[in-house]
Figure 1 (cartoon, helix red, strand yellow):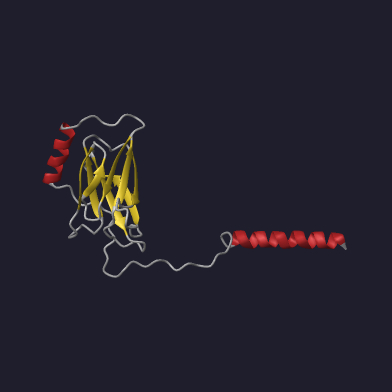
Figure 2: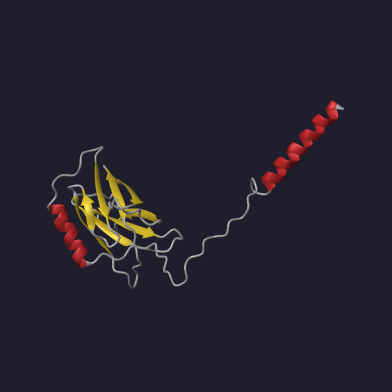
Length: 173
């Protein structure tokens, strides 16, 4: 009788394993996919660099103090409207792109006085207002197209729609 149960348990275990593998792994309830809001443009492209931005970047590179030493960071706290609230000495400016053709809400540029194209970037939604919890959302950061001393930041709401959000940015050297 004990041999019968051992064989049956082995067969049941093998059957469960094979069904699991055939079904693509452990089954879980399907989650409905978050649908983008109607009329919201979900662009992953950066806005084009204007002549004014290019000139500002060149001027900032010429006015460099000195890049932070290895292991140190440059940082910035930026408001939802693009205003630079707090920052380290190497951060020159920040601004929010005006939504329009090819530009969605929540797109920002942070300009520094040294080349950051090969650095590590970390951003998070946040503010420096002690009486306020920032709105929920997501943030991504990348090197700015054609501007080696700037980073591009895109903020979104929790459903993935482009939205203006305050953020903190750290650039590791």
